[in-house]
Image (cartoon, rainbow over all chains, first blue to last red; front, side, top):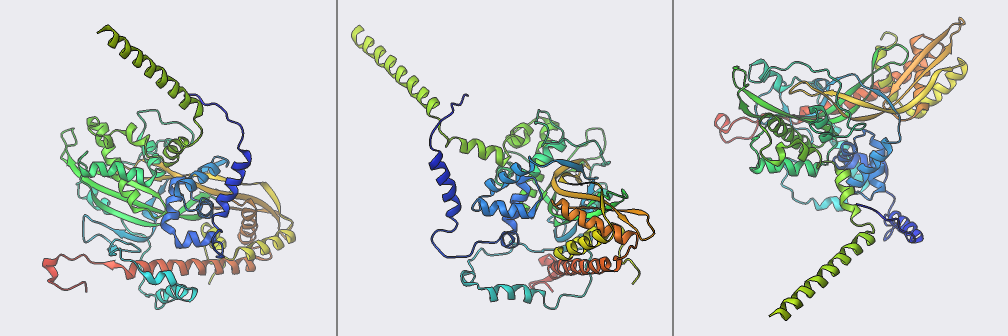
Length: 372
Length: 157
């Protein structure tokens, strides 16, 4: 494919850029939405941008949403563009999510799990009926929401960290034994995906993949183009403390925390293939922010791709190349929207070929007519 | 309560949770009093977050996080030069320098250490408050999905 540079339109483009900014303010005298409002009042959308941008920078993610008029793909694109301008200072030590400070923890596999299940903030049991009173929600009503919820906080201490459900399954011998692998993970920000890729590349690609893309492919497996048949062993949302070495002493210190969603799915059991007893198979998903659909879909795709690697891909969701090359929102959005840009030369070429073909077709038809 | 009230590994988190304007103002004053000089240029950029997933125990990169770090040298009253350092999830080298000054003052019990400890307490109180809210999120939404056969027609107890 070749591209031809175009000229002209600079003034129109500049005006269009100004208009895009002005659209936020046209048609009313409202106050500008504050970046902190986006972060606090739209945490799900905000979290999606954090994870798809691949950079945990809450303030910039909120700014990107404001600047992009609420478009999560464009907002994630801005985060990616920003990150590409920043120096890489470090790689963190290996972090273990058992240290997460949880705000939500559920299991669909067991009703009784060590430490118990806590729903936390979730729309799972809502009836999706409109609350029209929110249209008229004023500052007083809004601030009273938090004040009322914070009143009479329970004194009973709840631990912030909990054991993992699958650790219990592993202890019971229902899972294949696993030992920690400390090989240097694949860095998708520095190297292209050349297949086959290690699992670390697949997990990193999906961790910043587009939620809808991951969901669509995982859904194909759920509906029948695959046989993962998942059960959510554990889904947890919480804050992971980030440990980094102190610049003066080298001691690991807590430098901050990041909100993440994590899911482990339990799938069908399989023979281990080496004469051992059959064990359950598993899939793993995790991402920045609170995004349960993404974490579950990622875990299903992790499992389906593992099956594809073991048995050969039998459907699209088991093919790592198919999955990993189609779930990145920035790449797919970029390819899709580039079709809007001027393609005058290539399209004129198509028209030229069509006209020539039509002409030949007409000539042949005429020759056939005269040959009768 | 003993001085300081937290292990050094928790100081950054606590001080960073205090009011940033007061953190920066106190650090500026102490940096001037103690003739702070950078031991190394402050740095701001990104770090890859390396995670161990829990099903096959592989490691992978979940994404990137902003990181700022600084090391400063401070002049103690006895004439020694001592060091402070800071690393924080932020993209401001200036903030990292401020935190490094406070870290050095507290670590070596330099003049102003009690003021830093005050910020530490303030930040820790903030963190405790957040932890209490998170704990309430869990406590108030604890659920027992008892089977219908076990509890009859009643709702949860």
